[in-house]
Image (cartoon, rainbow, N blue to C red; front, side, top):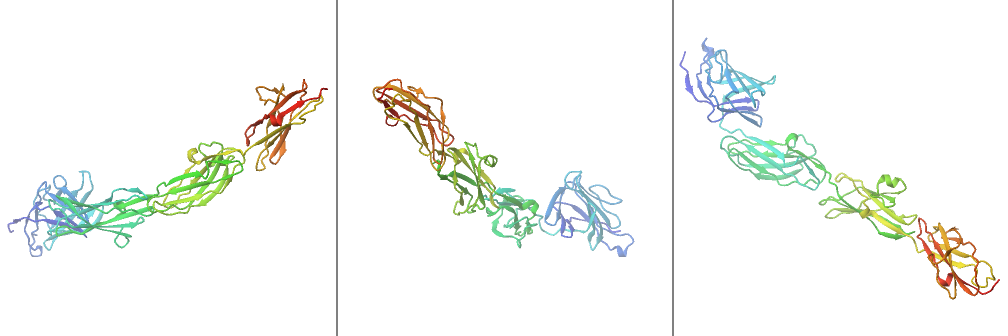
Length: 493
């Protein structure tokens, strides 16, 4: 048998489009070739693997470097271990593990054919055709891409980051062409891309270089996927990555600015008020949808839909209209007329749309207004102004409201005197004339009459004083003027 010649070779493991290469200083091999067809003693390749050398497994565009020390071995029935001379009958078994020593185990079993090793490659029970050949002069590169953010709010922008990893000290050069696909494209490709972001030159040192895409600001919510395509250079091959695993991000609806305020912060009873809502979006994306308006009675803090349902008013929904930059849209509620005086608060609820989330504003700071009573008239007149002839007198009060809302409550009567001249009477200086009297009426007015009062002297002045209690609609009021409320007794009994 011929002496085996010692030569240095570099091998590549190809799995369909998969390649296993050594680094430049990888393995020393002794090779002797002869035709097994002409000899009963098959002369086969002899392999010697240097412990600690680095090999690279390339499957498609994915590369994985690993050390042979403790992870790889060539073996046959005669030779075991990381280093050895293969002297079998044309069969070579190569086993390697990735990652830790407990990682996945890959195994290739090869026989010589045409000066190469060929045979099946087994990965987790799946067998593929494989070939171990002398390496071609090229570098194993890998492209990793990922958005800067996995989720952004509409109106914000995202960028794609691309890193090309090579081997040794050969820095990848060339460009990355960036694209964006709308929807959960699986994967994003140049054919499905909706936006071409252009090319960016790689920059780096050592065996790594990177590029950042221009910022991309989606105009609607949803899912988007970047695509990065590496141009390749004289040393490294072209690669691309547009997978949904690495390259996709979501665009979520932002909460727009919602400002609501009544047309008037104070109105008179019987007048109407309305609520105006302004929804402010981002950029040029104008909010659409509706604003649902409600009203709550009292100083609701804040007004809510449940409070509006409990004694309030549902004013219905109004569609937004508007445009501009920043994008704004407005809606105004239907008119609301309060049934009584007091404090009322509006509530505006924005429905949201495909670009913006739902939000509301029912704060007492922005949404409340007061309803004041209309000018209330109370007039009081004694039944007789003179010549009582020793008879009793009564006071008559008329309370006048507005807008057909009849005043309710009571009138309390007082009387002051005797005095030489008319003197205005007050509750503090007067004497009660009977208990308070409930007023009654319809429309805008209600009346009450005091109990009878009999003067104790003649040729003197007496003056009535009337105090209206007020109610839920009208405030209290009084009339004690000397013009209206005084009378003079000139006739003794």
